[in-house]
Image 1 (cartoon, one colour):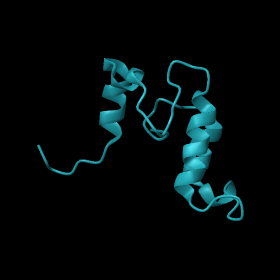
Image 2 (tube, helix red, strand yellow; image 1 turned 30 degrees about the horizontal axis):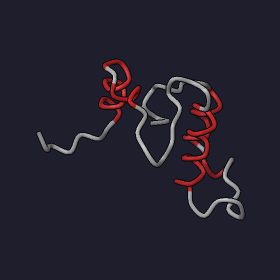
Image 3 (cartoon, rainbow, N blue to C red; image 1 turned 90 degrees about the vertical axis):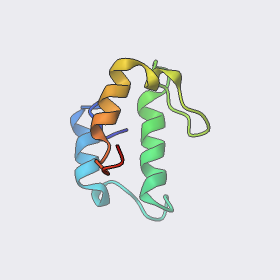
Length: 78
């Protein structure tokens, strides 16, 4: 989600390019946990508010869905 283009701020993009510069291994068990926390913080209080336990219906609306689908790897499953 963070690399999809929905979140274009420079700091987020830099974190995605250079995660080791931002992730403190003593605080986070994995990079996934770090990026999940970041996604929750970036979206808190907004229409794209993210919770790991359930998908916000806003992500299924046409604009967001198109952006997210375009960011998914092409696996040749169509």
